[in-house]
Length: 255
Image (cartoon, rainbow, N blue to C red; front, side, top):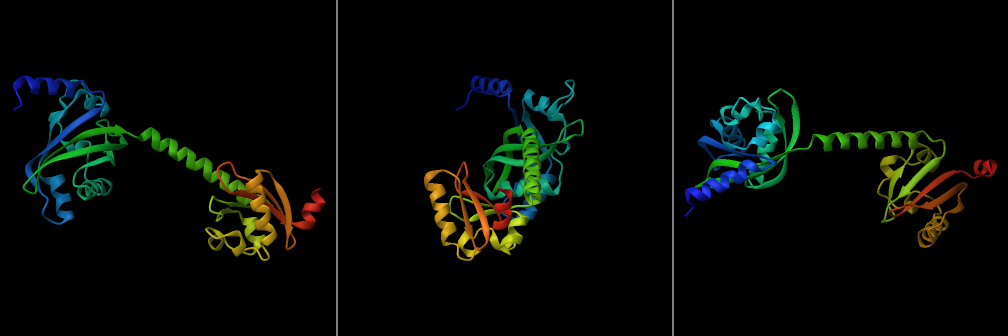
């Protein structure tokens, strides 16, 4: 049996956490025996309220220090929206036991933030009584991912603009990158090439395959001419090879 002293200790631990912790309760328990869309509706409409939050929660959502977080309605930071309805569907699918579930919340100053929640729930007789968990800000990670995507997109644009062909294979030998010049030289589309072996798009590919095997085995670069195309092949850092190809006469002129 939990004593008053135990409750005080647990509450003190909860309040001292640096992570934003919360517990949302429903005045009318959510019926989990109905279809998913009805569960979603009830989660937002069955009078949810904050049963308990810690000071880190108020700091996280930038609540004025003069106000109590529990006095504010959950919809202020967790409004009903297509994204948050999807979030609830994720909770339903996981039995309301999930880690790092993504959602879009709104701080009390009106700014939207991408967050992740670790969520657990109290469920009794098919009724959701309350949910509780920890929320983390992942905005910085999303901005970083967006920056990386921008850099990758620009690199793809650069490769696509090169006048010589560029083709790369992965660990399994399948093509995982080909630029526009290589498409023209090999008379193949990006869609036809990706995921295929080199021998499926290069006529008389046996010398080329042998050269690729040699490059992978010896970890050095090698040049080979196949069907009028000059290939300069180098090993990738992770696996597979990168090949630069052009008409043989152009390669000879460059030399």
